[in-house]
Image (cartoon, rainbow, N blue to C red; front, side, top):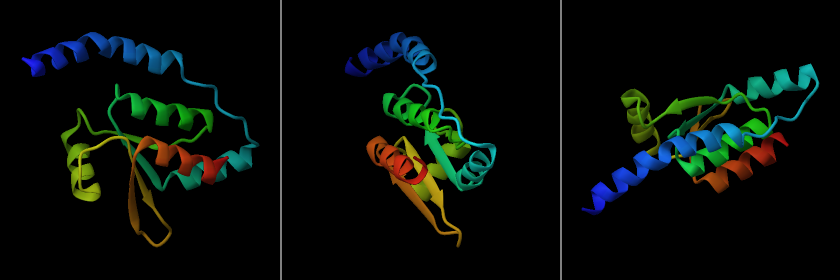
Length: 125
């Protein structure tokens, strides 16, 4: 019974979450072309695994937009391949999750929206 209630609630709230995600997206900061190109190169090493309507994922995507970060997005909710990558790499299906690859090819999986936002602000502000 509770499972049906939550499924119904999710179905009702999904359109509102999508509208909020679109409507509330902040404008990105403007950088000189060379600086933005450098940011783009650094962001090539980052991938965000997310669910489209997850409020915590929306928070992270808003921060990415505010900082003008072209980070690749992977839908772990509707794409079974991305879901499997998240489970195999990070060890659990929890979003948001930021995959960070360093220059040596070492991969770190960062969970929790607050930690991800703090990392992005420290690295790119």
